[in-house]
Amino acid sequence: MQHRGAWKNRWTFMLATAGSAIGLGNIWKLPYMIGVNGGSAFVLVFIACIFFVGIPLMMTEIMLGRRAQKNPFNAMQQLALEANASTYWKYLGAAGMLAGVLILGFYSVIGGWVLSYIAVSTQGTFHNISATQSAQNFEALLNSPITLIFWHSLFMVMTMSVVARGVSAGLEKANNILIPALFAILLILLGYSMSVGDMHAAYQFMFTFDFTKITPVAVLSALGHAFFSLSLGMGAVMVYGSYLQRNVSIAKTTIYIAIADTMLGLLVGLAIYSLVFANHLAPNAGPGLIFQTLPIAFGHMPGGSFIAVLFFTLVAFAAWTSAISLVEPTIAWVVENTQVKRTHATLVLGIAIWLLGIAVSLSFSTWKTVTIIFGLGIFDTLDKLTSTIMLPLGGLMMAIFSGYVMKKNHLQDELNLKRKAYQIWTVTNNYVAPIAIFAVFIYLLGLVS
Ligand code: TRP
Image 1 (cartoon, protein in one colour):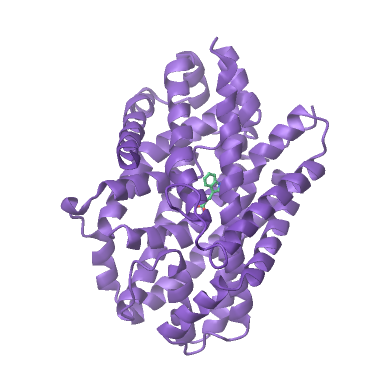
Image 2 (spheres, rainbow, N blue to C red):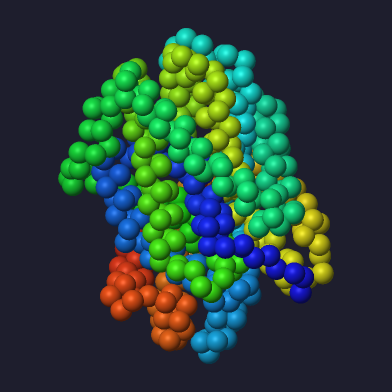
């Protein structure tokens, strides 16, 4: 076995895990999903999913990784042996690796959109831009596969070159500055939206909770997005937890990260929707939402070009630190089980994901009519298949494994919680989260058949 990395201390683990969680999911995906799923109904369910499913399962996943100190595949195998259970559990680790690869296949393309928007911002293109022009610019990007593939390729090279070096090496320092900087620039954006946008309408849209508006589809998407946003269900935080020392409190770390992650997404949502309503745009624009609305804001604020460059650069960094965590489980598995070098493994996996991303890039134009499952296109298939099925299923299995297979004293040992906190974790992990996920799956089966 080759050498395993380790985090220097609790802080670097926390930043790396926050770096994984905070990404396009918060800035790009959550805002448009709120719009597509009817606003506040979705927000409420999403927050509930973070608290009752996301937080307990994030603790579970980190705990599994730290106990085994191995990549997800070997970790599940070892923990199963320790509990005298079937080693088939290792395939849960394998399924997670696959999910990570499928996610990066489209994540990297969206990361490419962000990179291209950095380039566009430097040219002052947004100056005094109208809503129509902004939408047209975005359409034009989607319709030029070569441009999309170029930026996607660059994003893949960025991601894989960090992974090739080992996650704990280069990343720790970068995270230290980038996450606080991202929060700072968001506050500027929020301040601007408050002064010129329709914050009142945005607030109402997102936070007037009307229980009658909650639809089953909104619940399904909210649950899936809770997993996506916290990087759960595929082994990313498990592998990060495996590099963690024993003396760090998993519960505290998890709660801080989950709250920061959720707050960030909701703040972006507020900033965007106040611009959407002030400019009479449609809240349900879908994946293009931030790329169509934010340029309007940047184009009309003093120093807007500069702020735009800064904003998209920070988003690119956030996406980058997330992307890395999507492939780390697979790379850790190769490195720990074979003689293949980290660099070689990274190259091969990188090429495979790059090819997948090319298909995704084409799915917005040339291959628009190509459908994979349930009449969904390539991008939608990857997105829906991973977020609404693979991640929740992975989370469900981890909850069952920890709650019903592992030995109680091992759990207590690793989580190291006070009595009350341990009870809360047990109830959410063993009952609330699995039942919620299960119920959503049953509903999904009903939809399909
Ligand atoms: N959480 C990241 C985001 O919000 C995306 C991500 C990184 C992810 N690693 C993951 C999602 C693992 C699911 C599983 O952008």
